[in-house]
Image (cartoon, rainbow, N blue to C red; front, side, top):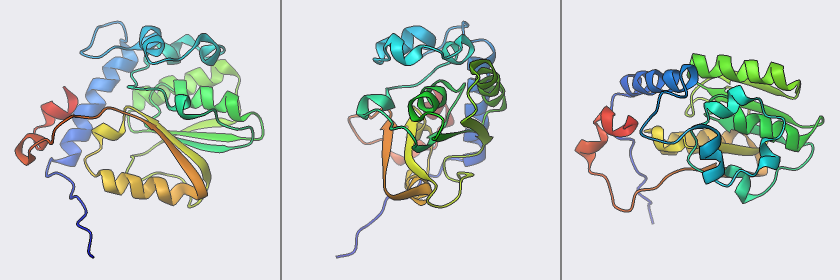
Length: 205
């Protein structure tokens, strides 16, 4: 029996990316401004990040945290694992992951917002970790080779990607056989109509 796969909504992808970049540029550069979502250390506490997870993570990464869940609540990462963090923002989850996997592991954080990448790289330098790096890229076009990762993590980003099937295919591509996804995100309780999906302000607001 043929399976009907969902189509990506007809929203203008580049306009949506621009709007998302504009919003998260502010989260990176002025995290205390106040937003329609929680941010920073208070948000991390709400989402179940205990202080042990945050130990050693520079405040510059924590203050611009804007996740929607806790990918580490699905299980700790193991020493030596290779990890991709999709939508790594200011780097909080990538830096936590780098400490979990240890010197034999590797972490690649991927984000499309330059000020977030700049902040993450500054936090990496401050942390002294050398098993993590940050790359510019999109969830639907991950700059990672096939079968590289043991784990793909993501936090509050999947909901912002229109082509969810394409993003899942990319995650599957970069995972090793038997690899796993640890995604934290938000869900809606009823379907969103197609016209609403075309409105960029509903994606970002």
